[in-house]
Image: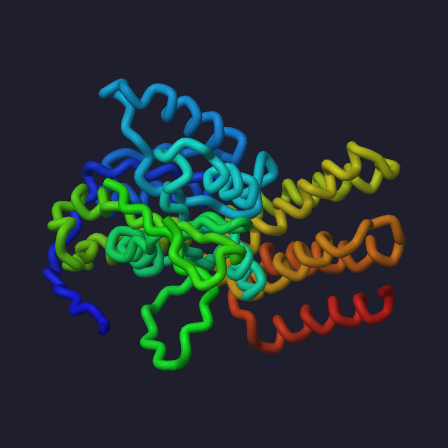
Length: 187
Length: 172
């Protein structure tokens, strides 16, 4: 059964959001930050590579008790950066043992348009991939997808990240699955 | 607890977390209600892109000047770490030019910058012929920037593409 979606057409208030933007190009940093500000995002933190972002997330996580430090809600990261790539950042996030970090929604922004890259980002646990050139519509759509459709996370021997199956497809054949997943409900 | 037909089969864990983001944007987390960003704000964001693109050719020019400098200093270096670093710079500038040009609809510059970026990724520059091909890309980008050429189609675009294509087939 496909669940009924109730569209409220409510305009999202992003003023309580903190978005971490990881982008090495100053031009793209300025542009994407300005777009996020226009969307009403309350706090935008910018890093110019994975190394900086990893340090920042580590510090933020360590100081999470402080009411002056907001947790990051969404990570937007470029893929190719000289000081630590999006690949490294995504691997670090999904491989982290802290809950506040490993479940972070990650949107990869890439100038590469190959299916191979989209497959790679998905297999590394990215929530969404946004292919450049970006527009207001595509950026807004990825943010809304992360908010509206947070896929459950799956952990297997060689994968941790959002469920790579995007649709609940009805299946009427024989059940050949060898194991049912262990379901962990989390608050 | 894992329920399966085969106890030796690989285990999978499924984490269903409550949707904190939905609560933060003011929606009821218990329902599957969806909202949207204010379409006016999305339009404003597009207007920002348009505004930034007014200086696109100038920005491409700045990136291109840095690329040319990195390429020139790379040519003076022997194989080694310093040279690899310069090659990385050439790659990064080409990649940035491609991003800026594509964003602002400068299709021709985006085409050559992408081609240069991909060529740099796949080759080592050790060969003189490879350097000629890279130089052909850079020359094309300089012509495009100086003449503020935007479209990916048309006689000038086709001529430039043909020139670089010839260089690649001759020297590859």
